[in-house]
Image 1 (cartoon, each protein chain N blue to C red):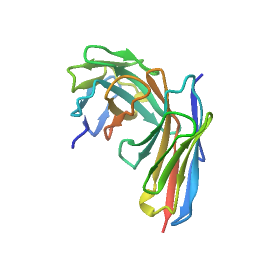
Image 2 (tube, rainbow over the protein chains, first blue to last red):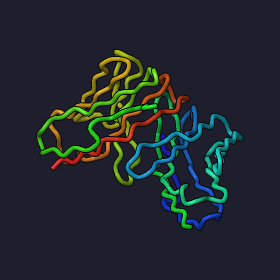
Image 3 (tube, rainbow over the protein chains, first blue to last red):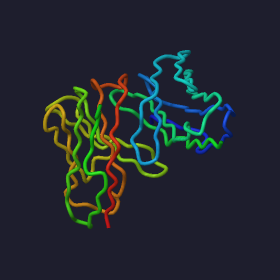
Length: 108
Length: 114
């Protein structure tokens, strides 16, 4: 069964304290690995797509990487405005399989 | 830049009532999707429409129906609402069908069924 698991469920950081979020997947024939950001009361906002192991993408303080079994979202020197829930999803055939997310809180 | 627009934003229903959730996108996307999001369970696909004129069941279709009205609009109908359908419903769209495509989401409809 296709599955996407995110860890940790919640993470609290001090402003400037870098860390990584993990997304492990067992998705047959993975087509793409997607990262989203979700703010309270809002829909998921697309961040990155990764298509092959070894691929990396960056946007401001965020960098996403992909291996054959997992993806990491690295957050460098986070700011309070980076606080949100981060979702990853694996693309299988014509559907996305979502993880349950990591709730990130960055304290000033 | 509206993107994906969902109406209404909030709704309270009584068990057995019916209602339709509306979704429209202005990005000229071919594919549209309906998800529900429940605490601890992630986003689950209810129905999707790969292109205008086609619809298919997702992971949790029971109790729901959909209509792809035209290329822009995709509606979700609850014929006889049940408390188990209390959830946040998200509509999404993508340029084409397929797991290579990122999906773009609306801000959701928060539905409570008493």
